[in-house]
Length: 234
Image 1: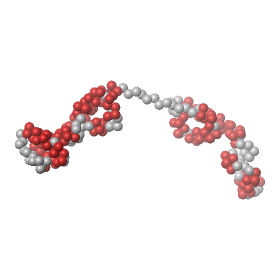
Image 2: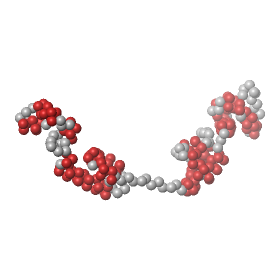
Image 3: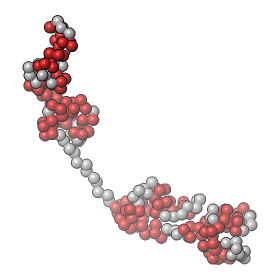
Image 4: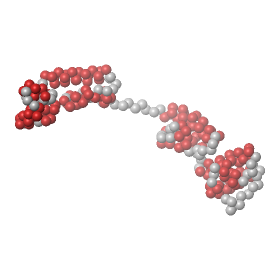
C-alpha cells in the first residue's frame, strides 16, 4: 500500500479510503500480494502457477527421498511447504498424500513363554531369600518390568502360568513365611522368642498373627519351643 501511495503521491490513509470505496475485500488485499494484484486474483497469476509447480515438485521429491515415511512424518520437517499446498492446492495435496500402514509383528508366545520362565524362577527365588515380599502376579511382573501385561497374557504363557500359580501366596501364607524367617533371625541374634519380638522382627501386626496363631504354635513346636501364647496376647 505504501508503494502505491508513493507512486500516486498520496497518503496511505487516502489509499485505504479509495480501496474501501472500490469494495476490495480485506482478505483479498491481504492474500493477493499486498495489493500487487489489483485486477486479478493471486491464484490466477503466473507467479502463483510457477510457485505451485515448484512446491508440487518439492513435495513429490520428498516422498521419493523418504519412501518409508508417511506424509504426516514428512510434513513435520516441511511445515511451510505443507501449509502452502494445503491452503492453495488442497485437492492435489489430498491426491498425493501418503499413508503408511504400521506393520505389527505377531508375537511368538511359545518362544516368549520359554524365555520368560527362567527369569520368573530367578525372581521368585530372590523374593524368598531376600527381604520378604508377597509372591503375586503383580510383584513378579513389577520386578521384571512387565506388570502391565504379564497377568493379562497369562493364558498365552502356560509354562510360566503353571509355575507362578504354584508359588502364589495368600496373605496368611505370606505372614507365616515372615514368621518363620523372623524365628530364624531371632535365633541367629540369640534373642528370646516372644510374641512382641516375633511381631516386630517379622513386621506382622498382632491382629494378623491371631489369624495364623495355630500355624505359629505348630512352627515353634517343630523347632522345639514350648512357648504358649495366651488368647489374650493374640
